Image (tube, rainbow, N blue to C red; front, side, top):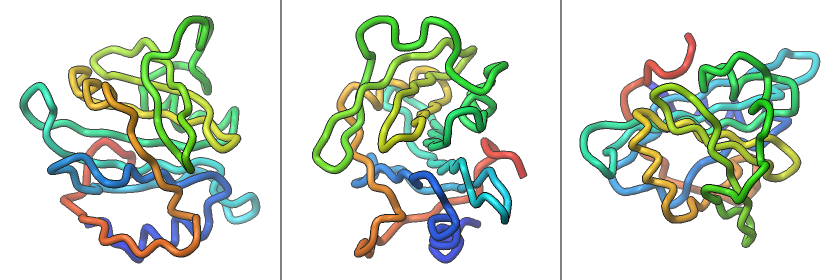
Length: 169
């Protein structure tokens, strides 16, 4: 089961944001987290998993990934073949947005089978939001407010749930 202590360790070692939607959508819980990197370079990619009710019915999962370009954590968790969103990314109008530090950042829909995948750039890092099933993408009808858990002075009472199967072991 994920814990606040584990989340603090992730944030302390991360070179990129550790994004948490806050306040959490109603009924949602943090269900896991992971990092990509090593002891020499630090964590150059982070993923936070959440589980909760799909606005269109049934359960849903959300992964929020931050990474340096070329890491490939977001694309891998989205089921894409390359390390980035692919050709034609951000060619048209954005499909969703997130809020961070008083600013809105655009997100574009990325083609993926059975998942709603959105990507953009926030705080000089790639931001990926992967929702499954794809109907859970309705959560992004309104901008999602994000916090970077690396920022000091946050004493959040983060609710945790059972460990997700959406992240690799």
